[in-house]
Length: 178
Image (cartoon, rainbow, N blue to C red):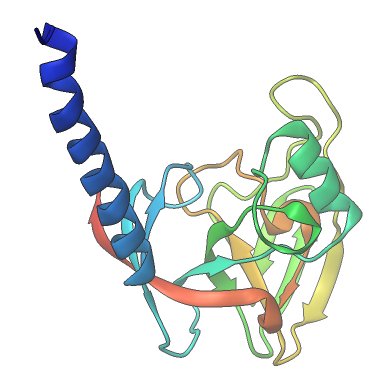
């Protein structure tokens, strides 16, 4: 005699296996899900296109104290990047030879203030945030300034400065966002 659970167990296992297989195939085909507020929420497709200003990128943070603190506090997740960091997604707001200033007033790129870029002194729990300040820094061709364009409280270049291009894993394009 079979119980109700026995009859249901088989289809549930098959559905679960299909879901896992679908997720693995999506990941292998270059699809990535963004669940943070650093860029618009949604599904993104990885690309080998050249990195340009205004593009979204998927990247591994460098092993530095600012990112250790960010992981410890939950600003970034744990993952498979060096240092045990999770991948991050940000927008490239400055690159090749752009002139960048990060002051208490905000981030300026070639003299233009980036909207909603004023650094905060503390996070939402009252803990002090890292301070990165620079005036009229000319980005080397190997440097990028990565920021959120959707969240004024994002952990971004205001707190850690430029990132080397070698940390970029891929350009990403939105497939479906909300």
